[in-house]
Each structure stands twice: as structure tokens, then as C-alpha cells.
Image (cartoon, rainbow, N blue to C red; front, side):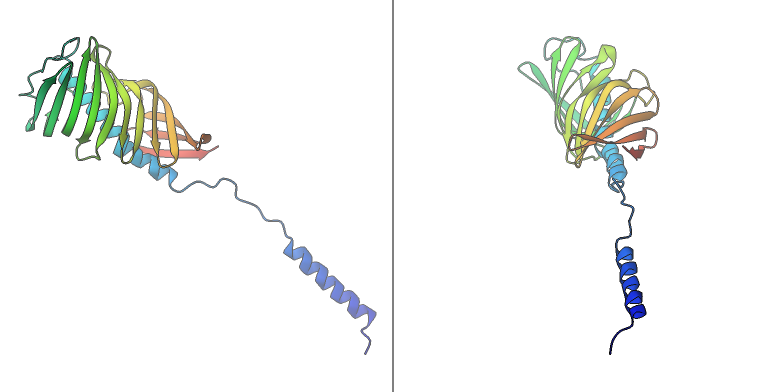
Length: 231
């Protein structure tokens, strides 16, 4: 039986409509926000940046009067350093070895517990530091090298924890919790964040991934929470 011309036209129309529907344009989502970015940034601040800077500020308080300006490795009296736990100092060649044993320090600026070792090499106005498995308030162990300049309230260096890496130098002379600094950077997961500190609680950072700038983030240093916008 022959198919009518009208039927063939109707079938062709259906085929065309189906083909057109199958090629309907879709909107692609470009560079969606990585759900690990902001939580990872917040965790790096709490687990790496805060304990490193806390340890440096406490060491600055402890050593600013006893070792500042020293050119020889002479141990300070550590008897009054800890309100709980203990701390010892050993002079080895041209540097000091400070051992902290769950030492709770109530310093001029901070109250925290230190456990681990720090090597100190006096160099006039600058003190060179090497931290070895140092923990702060039960943090993961901190290792790395840095320096203190007590007369200028400067501190910083390059430090590692199992949660990330921090490098840079800041200035913090008073009890205000927000330092200034030309550069502070830290790494976590496959991200790198860096920015300048202006003494306020707002810390804007650029975030890179595999060498490419991927996001601009704002960190509230009071809450240690971040908010990011993709580039």
C-alpha cells in the first residue's frame, strides 16, 4: 500500500523537530566554586598561620629582654617563663637550644602552651630561629626557620605543618591582635594565598592554583573566616 504524500511530509516534520530538540543549546557552568576552597582557607588559618604567629609572638616576648642585641649565645633564666610545665635552655656553640615541656606562657601579649624545641642564634638586633616539632596549644607540629627583630617588633619566616605552609614577615608591637606586613603567604592543599596586612581585621588575599590566579578572598582576622570570589 502506498503511503500518502501528506503522511510522508508529517513524518519528515516530526523527524526535523526531534533533531532540533536534540541539539538544543545548553548553558555551561564555567569555573564553579571549588567547595573546598573557603573551608580549606579557614582551616589553614586556624591550623597553620595562627599557631606559627602565636609561637613567634611568645618567643619575641620571652627573648626581647634576655637575648635582644646579644652577639653571644648566653642562656637566659627560663625559671619564670612558664606558669605551668617547664622550659630549659642549653648553650651549644654559637646558638641556644630552648626546650619547652607543656610550658604555659602568660606573656605580655598572649597566653598559650608551647611544647617542643626552638634553636636561637643571636645576631645583634636580629634573632635567628629554627623551630623543631613545636606545638602551640596542641596544634600540629611546626618546623621551619625564621627570625625576630624585637626592637622593631618584626617576626616571621618560612614554616611548615602537616596542614600547610606559611611564609612572610609581619610587624606587631602592641596588644592589638591585627599585625601589619608587606607580605604574608600560606599554602594549603593545591592552593597558594598571599596578601598584605594593614593593621585592620580585614585581610584581602589573592589565591592561586597551579600558578594561576583563580580567586580573590577576604579574610576576617577576628573570626578567621573567609569569603571568596572567583576570577
